[in-house]
Length: 181
Image (cartoon, rainbow, N blue to C red; front, side, top):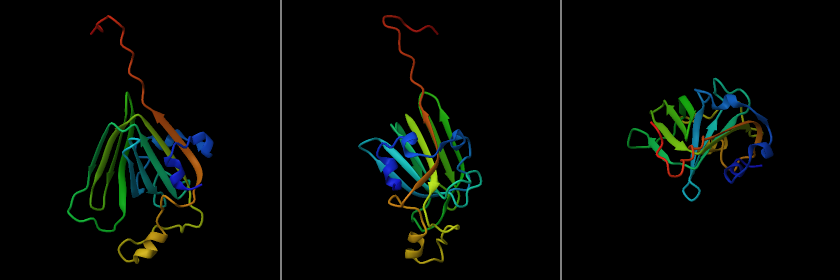
């Protein structure tokens, strides 16, 4: 399968791998490199493609995908006026489940944050067969070398672990009654 296949309604249990709730714990994405962001406005979904080769917490697989669907709010902030090739290393992450899932990711190397609220969050980790053990050098390597050694949406993908969180439903209002305080 290709990583892109996860973006079109793949269900974690049918994709394969082992369920692992740890993927949704605070700072589980620490020292992971954000490689790409996919936004689907039609289906109100956002996916983060991450390189796991330098991860502190996640030691199974060399790539990960965080898919958030039913987006209610999206905040994207990167300082500076020019986007230059560099590793966007995540220094903190959180996924809080309530009547929506609130996800936030903070980065070094130029800073930046991504924050959003969604109805559902799915995370997969896995392997891209044949990928080197170290990420590319974004400053010194030529563009073709960086592209060759960076995970991409069309890369082959072998799933290893996954987790899903679904927002809690709002309690149904009682017909004809005003809720007590």
